[in-house]
Every structure is written in C-alpha cells, then in structure tokens.
Length: 476
Image (cartoon, rainbow, N blue to C red; front, side, top):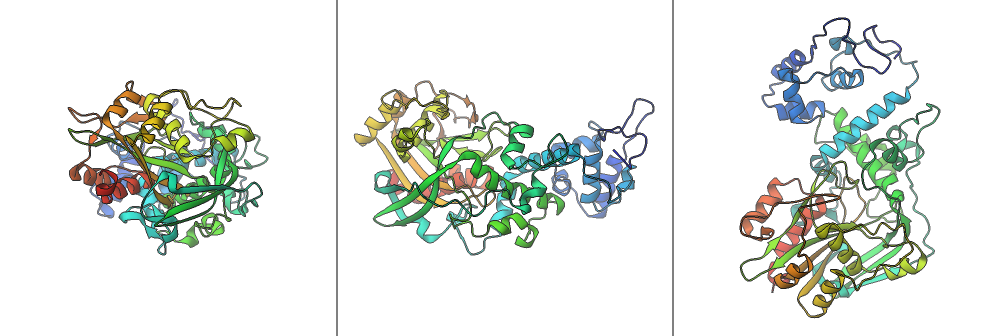
C-alpha cells in the first residue's frame, strides 16, 4: 500500500516476523476512556464500532490488531492522527485500492449485522411523523394498520401485471460509496446484491421472483393489498444499501444515536418510505405463533444467524417469518401461490421442521396436500387454527416491508403437525423452551422481558406487542 512505512505489507498488515511488534492500541484505548470518562467496555465498543468482547481482548492483550485499515478506522473514531498507531497520512492523490474498498465494505457490513437492534432504533428516530407500533421501532401509517385484528380471509389481495418500475433501484450515484470496487479495480459492483453474493456470501441468498407491494389500506371491515412483481435482489439493492449507509454513518459518528437525514444521502434520495413508487417494497410475512393449551399458552422465538440470512441477521425474530414470494417459478405458480396463508404454512414447514426450502428454482408446484400443510389448513377450516392480520409496518433500518400476523394453534393440532419440531434450522436456532413446556410461557412477565431485553427484529416486537394488546380477542 503506497505511503505506508516499510513494516506494512501490500495487504495492509503490520509485519512482525523481523522484529517484535508491541501494539500501542491497549494504552491508547485506556487513555481515551480516561479522558472521556468511559468506564465500561460497552461504551468503548460503541466508539470503535466493534463488539464489546473485542475491546476486552484488545485491553488484555489477548487480541492484537495489525490490520492497517482497521487501525485507521480506530484512529478516526477516536479523533486521533494515524501516526498514533505508527501510520502515515495517505496522500489524497492515491487511488482507491479494490482491497481497501472491500475491507471497508466488509467491516461496515459486519458492524451492521452486529448492531441491527441499536441501528434500528437510531433509524426510527429519523421518522418523527410516522406511527411507532405499540411503542416499538416498527413504524407505520394509520391506514396501513387495521383498527382491530382481522381474520386473514378478510384481506383482499390484488395483482397488477403492468405496474411501473420504482423510481430508485440502487444504482444511483448516492449508493456508490456502499458498492465496493470489483477485484479488477476498474469498476464498482453495479448492485449491492452483487457485493453481498461475492463478499459476504450468506448461506441463504437466492434471487427469487417475489411480490412487490404497490398499495395497502385497512379499516374495521377488512384490508386490501395490491401487488406487482419484483425480485428479491431488487429489494436488497435498495433496502440493504439504506441499512449499510446508516451503519457507515453511525460508525463514523462513533455510535451516536442522533443521525440526521442530511447525513444519509441515499436514504434522502429514496425519500418517503411509505411511497411504494419510490423503491421496491417486498414485504415479509411475520407470524407470532401461539400454542393454545389447557395447561397454559406458549409462544416461539428464533435467533437468526448472522451468516445465514440477509434480512434481520443476528436478531431474535418470531417464527415463522418469510418473504412473500411464490414457491416455484412460472406464471402459473405466481398466481397459485399468491396467498398469505399458503406463504405462512410453507414457512411453518421450513422453519419448525427444517424441511428443504421451496427455493423457487423449480417449476414444480408445491403440493399443499402434504404434511404439515394439509393438517394446518384442515384445522383452520375446523376452527382449531386461527390466523390474524394486524396490518403492515416497516423496519426503518432496512425498509423492505413487514406484514404483521399471528397464528393461534390448538395444542393437539400443533403437536401433530410439528411432532418432529427442530431446535435449529437453516436460518438459525429456536429460542429454548422453558422447563416443562413447549415454547415460552405466554405471560406478562415473559412478554415484558422479551420486549425489553431481547434484540428483537422490529416486526417481531410489533407482533408480540400487538398480540398481547389484543390477547382477549385472539385467544378467546
């Protein structure tokens, strides 16, 4: 790397083979903490934009940092000259190296996934004119929510084949800082999804056909949702750039909770989050599942893996939750799977039983008469499964869209459908059941603990809070 001292190699790593390198990082961190009155490692971690355990390891010497890009970031975060760590200022004329932009991108992406809960709260404060659902970070507009929970059958779905494309697609100049250089160093990745696939490589990341939200309205009698077609990557190219930009600015501001729209050019370019014409809105259907039992009701949570999924990575979520999309390719399946209920029961099968995901790569339609899909549908017709919809909200950090639902299942149906309930699936692990129960007891104490202490995804918090508020209706 041009401009670096001779003990730095071409990758930006401090050499230690010819001499003993004693890192100044622990002493610098201690001095910074003393000067700024910081007493906890969590506070210093927010300044540096890293995990608390990493700060502890730096201070004890259990971990050293020899990555020049990381050290430059630490110097900037602490408002120190790079010479503090033996680095030289980079001349402004030096061209950006592809490896540098990839390292920066990877660092911010890692920061995003490790701090989504706090970043969501930061993003929510940007939208003072929106409605926070039950005091959570999930935001909405009045006509996007039903005044009372609605049976899923009272939601009318419409499809428009000729909807115009959204105004923003993620290729705008404001998104360039968050699309790193390609390995050839000649151009940036055209789209954010290309960078995710090439650099982050999450386990589950497929560009499937999906339903794009065009319009939504609710009243006491029912709801209406209009959709067009889009793809999963269309949403990622905009919504995850919005999230990435927020994480980058948050890191540069040393974890400050107050960020303004002026700090976020791409988010500002996208504009009104509740205008479906501005960007692709590809909602997930988020379902709080309650097992209704004589000995007491229980609910279920899911810890989503940071390296497994793209949306809500590293957060605790309700289960099941999945993007609203057809299960197989082809126009016939686009029409056949255009159903909130069918999407929900496929996710039940995939997430509670870890059955192979209907990844949309085949043209073979899903057989909805197989188990547990048939059992759940028959039980719903018999009144032993009840499916409710609250409305639609947005996660302000990555505003892909959130359809908020709850499904109440009688214990005998649940135990039959999910006899082989798994503790881990391809997207993460199930929250442990309490002793003597299947799931988490549906009590005020547990609901309060989950809402106040768990790093819940915005949609998960909204569904838990709404279900608790309307429990007399939903659990009657």
